Length: 636
Image (cartoon, rainbow, N blue to C red):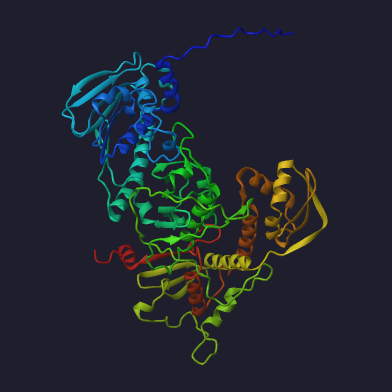
């Protein structure tokens, strides 16, 4: 039997400066990439227009960063290496509306505690430059004159030379440099107005000039993320003037998805962040068009009042906390949802930006629009104009066919009605008939049908060349989108349960369910609270007659409890509609007439997300005349 022995209280003492800095370094300096991040952010905060970075052995042996910023005065050099010494903030109000990338005043002190650091700087108006040196053990800075132009150079050598245990955790040189290069890539994407250069082991990798035009910005994107990114990019520029929110940048088409989320860059007021609210909004916007397990690529900039976002959450400053997270989620989701929905073959208009109405986009516990935001102070950042893709408001399909959840009429059977002949009779056009011709200005984006290949693909001709359409996938998307539109216009029908389902929940879940009864009713569920920890389901949507409604309601309550919103019911309904659309769409080996194929092409041109089927597969592709000439070596 063990005996509990009380310990004697140990005396409380102040930590030494060296030990305190090394503890802080454990949070700020994880690897060479962390050093580069902190120093590059200091350069950008100093107003630099050109930053050069040299690294050796992945940054472990040496890191040298030089900029042409405002510099540091001689009398402030030694103080700059002290903890909690900064020029970014002075009072608490500054902390609540931070616009600079750095503000803690810990980076230089933390780095100098685990490495040999030399800082040389000269501000405008100072006759000569001065240099300060500090090493981890004694922490006493040494000041001396130096030769240097206006700006600052920081050299960090022998990282973790005095903490061998930390050095053991570093990976190979290639891995460490990969992390370092990613930091440079992120900051180069965040500030197109600044030039960046990167050299590793005396080998130049990047020489990025300041990008001030659309072409130069796209060139930088192609250099950092690959030419395929910009080839498949859709330009985003959305604003909500009522709340002062703005989202702009680039997202890629669903056909350019990736197996890993390695090209996802989201900047809040110029700072790259990782946030669950943002990630969830992006996933929801792409949920109907991405193939299973794939991830979209994007470079997005989000602007809002600095007082609306708390960046003082973690020492690395990668995490933020939004004051109005529901408003932010709703705005990002609606903005991206509109851009993706408008990615249709008929889009030729050039529109620079849109006003996004903010409303409930998901099952939300509050059930109302968030409170009005305070006025937003302007945030300085480069402006981006609309690029190659339209951002017009979604339009409903123009076909006269109606769809409902229970009775999906075959759209293909109605296509003949859309192309009557001159005498008002239905035109029976055979596949061998002459293709429609028109003036070049009247040729629709997907052109006119030529023939059907193997009962699976439609071959069409437009101004640019050949269009190939997977008729089942295309018709599946058309049917699916019309079902969703019909569901928006008509309330969900419910059916009473013969035997009501009783659910045992926690008191918090029961409270949330009681607050959300109207929301559940809008989605076809009728719930009732019988006791402090008991709910009963009396009616369910007709779609879920055979579903596990008890588990679904529990999952929804869990989402509401932890996230404040849930889209599980909508997602399950959409999944059922997608299955119905798949079974209702025209099948392979179904022979279509030229008129029917043309009608299908016209419906694709006015249907949202018609570029992908419900499962994320592409519905059509194009081969230009130049592509065909290359295949057959014409002109060579």
